[in-house]
Length: 112
Image (cartoon, rainbow, N blue to C red):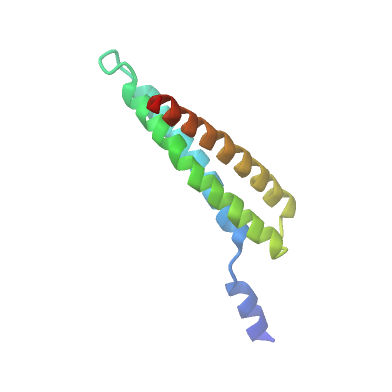
């Protein structure tokens, strides 16, 4: 009986990874926004802020895709917190789609 309890404690909880990625990205975004807004001066006219905001948006696509994949895996394994995982899945797919479309639109406008 104790071996069954140990085996269940060691198994991967995908919802923890999904919540961690999602929350970490959002917290990092808030910190980055505060730092970049504080760093804008008349000399640089905010161009570094635009660059890092674009890099942050570009990094968001794989992060949100990974969150969505982990949420799907969590739902398939019937892990707890199903409603929260469904919310993370919907928000991750929506944000990944929006960011991907915007990044591709910017790249396409630069090429033409």
